[in-house]
Amino acid sequence: MALEFVRESPQRLLDRVLGAYLGLAIGDALGATVEFMTPGEIAHQFAREGGMHRHIIGGGWLKLAPGQVTDDTTMSLALGEALLEGARSGRPFDTVLMADAFVAWLRGKPVDCGNTCRRGIQRYLRDGSLSGEQNDGDGGNGALMRNLPVAIATLGDDVAFERVSIAQSRLTHHHPLSDAAVLGIGRLLRMILTGADNRAIYGFLAEWVRAWPKFAFRPYRGRASGYVVDTVQTVLHAFASSDDFEEAMLIAVNRGEDADTNGALVGMLVGARCGARMLPSRWLNRLERDVVRAITDQASALLALALDRTTETAFSAVV
Ligand code: MN
Ligand code: MN
Image 1 (cartoon, rainbow, N blue to C red):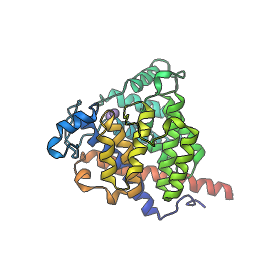
Image 2: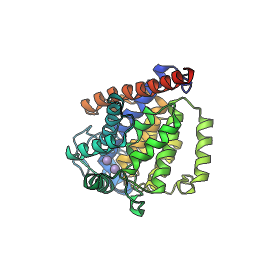
Image 3: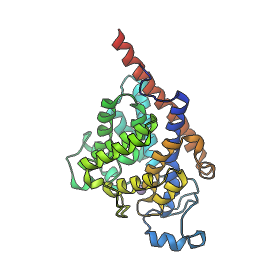
């Protein structure tokens, strides 16, 4: 009963969860080099490598060290830590803990912070509110990029997944397309993590795009900006173009624009599909060591949280 949602062994589930989280960091570190560039500029700058950006080398507009990650990964880690803190302190999925974690994250002088995220965190600091009014300007991908820990910690509980995903999103982004993207990409991720086959995955995607035609990704329009519609189209285009982690990743980041976030989300989905053991070592070995350690610790702790919760639910159902 407790493990009903797992179609595979617990070891395989952990491998997929870790693959998703490390894949997110790989895409972030790789894509950041070409963030805000156009595909033409990338082809020119990397002409000697066949016109493609392929290696984790840092640099970019943030002047990163090779293997350094940005807000996509560090905000995810901050959110994940808030979920674990909530479980430890008897405040499960408390939105205030998530807001406080984002405040601490911002005060820690992150290498990067999107405008909408900054505005939302400052609003919370000012008046303690956990959401702003719905805003046309909140259609960026900042809530989507960091929702992975929620998808893991609520595995086996779709109601909690939806509630917590929307709660953490609205701290900074209040827009129907952001909400839809967070839930849709999150559901897709949860299907992959729990071992759904391609038929189920592409059946879900076809149905979802029918409900939200803005996210249609075939034919691909080629826009890869931080607008959540462009992000979802780019991520699904890359995801559906190749089963191979490297190939899907290179398709996404070489579109430039919001390359780190697009790369992070593709890495999350394709990393979940292949599992951590199959991640390319030439990229994995490049990541900052303490980021890999934090992700590894958090991935298993978040999964344990999900398994404990479903066990409790099953237990209380029996009692
Ligand atoms: Mn970033
Ligand atoms: Mn970005």
